[in-house]
Image 1: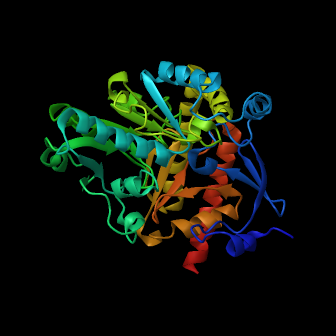
Image 2: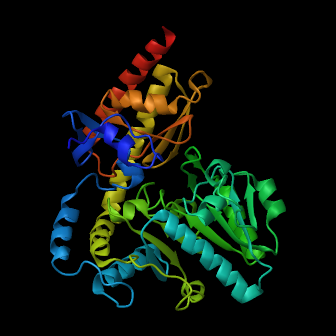
Image 3: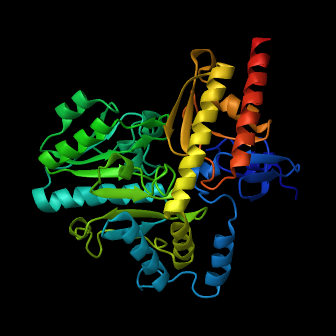
Length: 404
C-alpha cells in the first residue's frame, strides 16, 4: 500500500494538521520528501534535533549501544544512565537528576515534587502554584492546567486546583500574588508557544526574591530554551538566576525522546521510593546517545558557534522585517527567534508557514501571529543565509499574491 499525506487523515487521530507532504529522509539541516523535494529545516523537530537530522555520533552510539543494553528498567542501575547523570549534574551545577521521556513528563514531575516538598515542610495548606498567561508546560492534564492557555485545558472536566495564572513580565501582579500559600512559581525564561517572549531580567529576579521570602520553589521550564538553544547550556545562566528546580528535554536527546528534572539533594530527597517513577525514564539506549550529545553541545567552542549563528538569524530576520514590511518585531534568545506578524497579516502564521515550505524552507509557528525559527544548533552558516534569502523571496511573493 502506498503511503501518502492522505494516509495520515485515514489512520491517525486528527490532533495534528501536517504540511502537505511526507518526509522520507533527512540529514543535517536538509529534509527530503516523497516527491524528491528538498527543504532547509529551521524547525529542528520543534527544537529537538539540536545537532540536525541523523547526526553521526547518534547513529554510531545507537549501533554500539543496541548490542550492549536496550532497556532494563529502574529496578536496576545501569552505567549509561549514571554516566549521563554525572555529566549533566557536573555541567549544570545541580546535584540530582530524575530522567523521564519528554518535556511534559519533566514538568509533571517537577510540579509534583514542588507540591510534595511544600507538603512535607509546611503542610497541606501550602499548595498554590503560580504560572503565567500564555505559558506552555506540556500536555498532561496537570501541566496543561498550569500552562496559561485555556484552549488546551478546557473541555476535559474539572481542572486541578490551587493554580494561579499571572501576566508574564508583570512585576506588580507578581508582588501582589505571591504569598505564604505559594509552594512554587513555574516560568519559562523565554515563552515559546506563547510567542517567543523573553523574560525581563528584573521579572525573573523578582520571582527569585519573592519565592525566597515566602519559602516557595522556583521552577524554570527549560524544555525548549535549554541544551544550548539560547547560546548557553541553559538560559538561566544568561540571567544569573539559578532556579530551585530545572526541567529540560527536547535538544538533550538530539532527536531521541528524553527529559530530565534537575535540583538539589535536599529537594530531591522528598521523592523517596514509591513517590514517583517512570518505566522508560533513564533508558540506557537513549541515555548513551544523550551523553554524546551533551558532551558536544556543552563545550565553549560549540556554544560560541551557536551565538554566531544566532546573530546571523536575528540580523537576517530584522533585514527581512525592514525589506518586506510583514514583521512588527523580531524577538527571542539565541537560536530561538520569533517574527511577529503585522496587523495586516494577523492570524496568518499557519498559512505563511505552508507557503514558505513551497519555497523550500521549514519554519514553525507560535500561535497564529508569530513565525518561530529554531534551526539546528550546528546548521551551516551558508545554509542559514540561504534559508533567510528564500524566506525573504517567499514572503515578498506571498505579499504580492495577497495584494492582488
